[in-house]
Image (cartoon, rainbow, N blue to C red; front, side, top):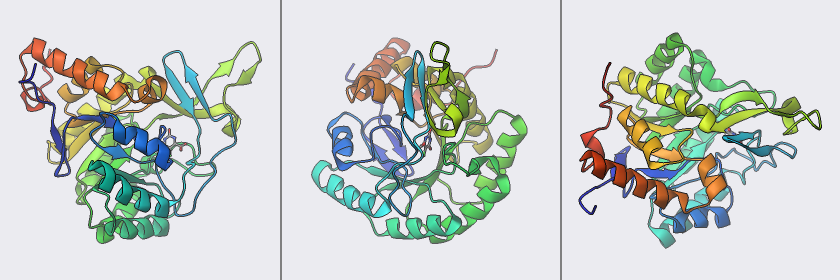
Length: 312
Ligand code: HRO
């Protein structure tokens, strides 16, 4: 077992294991981030932040489902300045790489935050133009022109390595359009996928939706979305020809789920709903399961099988 290694590098930053937390679940406060820091997650990803602190959407805004979750949190966060402070503190105390997630409401807000994070302890920036839950705002990642405008602006100011967390795509033409835009900029990685936007879960007994915002519409995550995750990881891995890395997230509950994403081309795998539902022990469990499965397969490192999905 000791001969199996699951280390990886994202944007040039070494991670002791390729399984870590995704931005969103239980990572908005310092207390929550310290729980992640003390877990086996090899990096600490923080909640998407905005310029000013936000309360988020009215509650209830999250519900566990049989095979995943629905959320319309609405970006509750403490504002970017808090995450700059947290990153310094976490780095000093835990010596793990930190990932900041930026989700500005406007181009100017995004530029301000990218500039501010240049002078921070954060190792990697994940730009999030894919949230489905900001009331009155479209999912920016579905607008290739707007993505171009935003990436152009943030690329000009960012001195930290950065990637983009993408919403799920369903049409092959859209993969091509977004990949063409991303290739124009020094984007180091894409993270696929954000939750599948605007699902509706209802309770037939009470005849009500499960969550309050937007008449019950929210992002669907967990096991429901794994196959869309696999397709998005695979398609972007092929389109980027491994020159821009892919991080897989969406529906990972086990080491075999992680293995499948890596087989499709992911250089690392993030865990979201499964972390919320199982607690911080999930990172160690998935890492051990992945190592066990690799040992069965005779793989010693993730490069032995990464991207090597066979054809039929
Ligand atoms: O806070 C949220 O409602 C949220 C964000 Cl920012 C996101 O990117 N994805 C998601 O499912 N929820």
